Image (cartoon, rainbow, N blue to C red; front, side, top):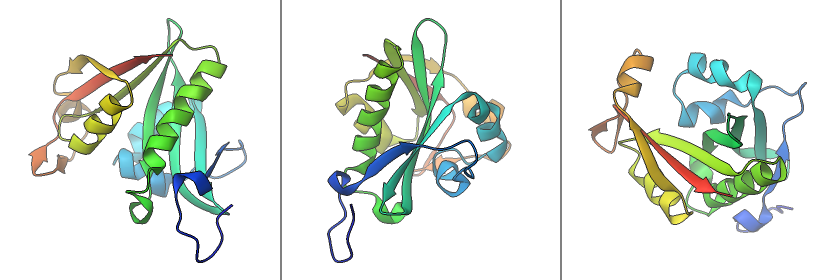
Length: 162
């Protein structure tokens, strides 16, 4: 539990499945995917997990079942003011645990070619690059996306055996 005055870290965070009647945390989801329309294409067929510090939502991830005993982390985000404290790493580890418990054998995640920090985190967490979806962001997003001074064009797909 997070108490005022305490340095918030991943150890103080709880992660829970979002109840069907709860409002989707679009403020967090849009940090990882700037298109609400794209989010709406996968969110209804997914499990949404929220990270809490006390009652405050500080992070989210979306776990979507795929074919062949695979699940994909379609969206993972930590609120900007809570980044750099290990929360993203903890969310990713929790996604792997939840996917394994649900019977999946492989966890998939995709990120943009410009998402340098995310690529670093995913590879450090045991994911291997398996494919590149060329021009994914050019074809699916009306507005160009830039990160780290690089245009986001291609989706880099990574997988991890569970």
